[in-house]
Image (cartoon, rainbow, N blue to C red):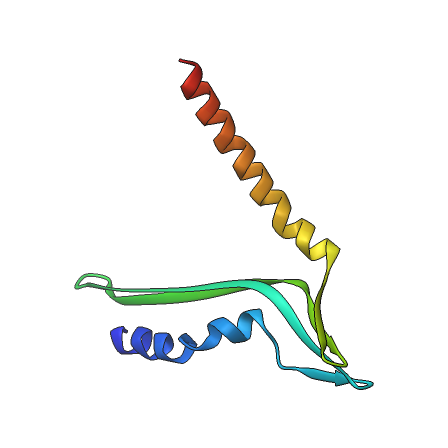
Length: 110
């Protein structure tokens, strides 16, 4: 099992940038580089019980939210956001920041 986990870690080590930035696409003389926020995780375990036998397990998962694209036209590069994707990312961030501020303000009032 340990060999499997090390082998899996070696395979996914270079995935980070490819998760966030896709390959360039040419559309009508315009270069487009899609941008996303992504995360993934893997886990595994093993155990040995003489009475029940041997056990092992593993799993993984991930997600990706498209944030927009870098668009290059005639030497000019700009970022065009995907508004829905940015809202999906921003809402939890704003909620967590508000909750943290609430805790800090209450602590400062005491």
